[in-house]
Image (tube, rainbow, N blue to C red; front, top):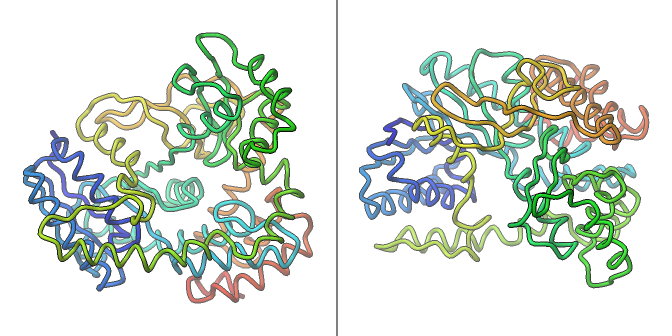
Length: 433
């Protein structure tokens, strides 16, 4: 049982109610702890606070919950910081998805130009967080869920002494996409993935202890013309068979870019525009539950469900309770643990987590056929982190054109200027000149 003081930045977000439900479900692991919700929206922050306080009281683990819009005050003397915020909210994400399509480029939340501008906005806010922590909680650890988690972590690791671990369920949820597409049971598989966040591959892929690839080959022959197979799953299965490695399905944006781009062009709304239609309903539900004597979150009416950010909470629990749990984490590639990637590169790998930190387990090299694109994305990640933290427009252009989804320099420059103008309220002046 770890008694800690945790600040949750993004505590008034549409995912925050589910995140607090998740943290309090783990209540016995954090008995007696204090949670400080921090957000810029006082009304939504108050709604989440009401729900969380009632859930905490019902849990009986002595966890207290408070809230503030004053970030530095909320961070004072904390042990842990859970970061999950979205500068500009879903309206900014909609621009990230919509503007690139105008320029003939895929628009996506964490990949390509959309992910690039989300990184610029997220890191601009993260600088204020790390500044505050060094002033009022110099021993605190950041457990980050703010996207793009790899680039955010890279920026903090490269430019501050603040420890940061970033989490994403990708290495856990990507293999079942391919296995189910092949008609296989994910519970019978052992798949180990590595790379950079949202862009990892398997270097170990066993089914009942044997190489799964022959089974995937046979499944592809059976299902390649199956109209009932979801397109995303079909592409991921196809890619696994060709590349001999189970991929993150985000690689569909790179290896099937023309198909995906045509789909985006034809779609009446982007993913963010769909979410924005649902968000008011989430808040209606949260306000109802905030006034209930016994709040009960309905997964169908809660953004992302009711066990949000649970991997971050698992890592936090393993760290403060010294359990040694095996979990995927994004962190610098200490001692070149993942072959083929620089030691300072933030990589996504399985680790054992205890009170001394996250320890990368022995890694095998990624297959040669997929190492190149992953290394290119890792180098892009480092360029974006530097530009976001301290760079100028020129640094940002060099970073953006390094992304494999950006086809040439002229498009990069035009895209950058239009998107920077659209997001100017969330960017430092040095990136606008």
